[in-house]
Amino acid sequence: MLKIASLLVFGCLIMNAAVRVEKTAYQGWPHCYRVTNGEIELIVTADIGPRIMRLGFPGGQNFFFEEPQSLGKSGEPAWVKRGGHRVWIAPEDPKYSYGPDNSPIDVKVQGGVVIATQPVEKETGIEKQIEIRMDASGTGVTVIHRLKNTGIMPLEYTTWAMSMMAQGGLAIAGFPPRGTHDEYLQPTNPLTMWAYTDFSDPRWKFTTKYVTLRMDPANSNAQKLGLWNAKTWAAYALNGELFIKRYTPKPPGNYPDYGCSFEMFTNNEFLEMETLGPIEKVPAGGSIEHSERWSLHRDVRLKAITDAEIDRAIAPLLGF
Image (cartoon, rainbow, N blue to C red; front, side, top):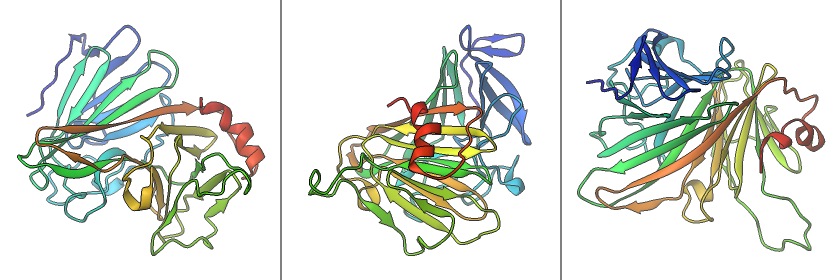
């Protein structure tokens, strides 16, 4: 059953003086919630998830991918790509990571906070939750992901926050600070490949400080890369606008996939930007949490994929 805790005034769920949460239908789902401060908006559906299905400027493009054939649907027996932003369990496992999120969820509005909680997964005994805190002004959003172990035994896992980006954009991720051989005799970070990773693919481009991956709907070959950065960030440039997600991981530890705090993947359907936490032993009744910071930016265009151009257009927006 759908549960909502909020103040209902004239059909609008009031969070605070600046941020509004409005009940709405979206893409065929009747029970959705539009969160806006007038400058940006996002939409969460309570009919499946937890997933944030839309992020953008009001009336503008959706930065998130939407799978046309699964929009508005629910109740499927297996996991569906669908689109949007979600939280998964890592390390990736065909059984434990791909638990279906196709049923109604619990949505609460508490002051300036929206909390979307999935029923406990029968496959894992884990309860997934996404908490959304939109800034009262500007384009900033804090998204907190939680995975609670509701079983009776400790489990080892971590959070995996995954944004499925719309077609046709360019993903940019930063390496840790570069230096000289004399300064850094020891390695500073992993760069992880999968068996299908092919750096001769023209969608990849490496500079000294950055790696970029272009989303091409005409190229169906999957590509993936992972890395570690103490100040993890990634950006997605789409039609003159930019989405940035930032994450500050805990010190290097038992991170998945040979020590990755960030991964990006693409095929001909979408591009995914993913952050990961360290694998922890979570006691019965315990939970782990993972926070990303999002922002949107207008009129951001790269004239070339070079250190100097990315430094000019994107680095000042990161806030590090």
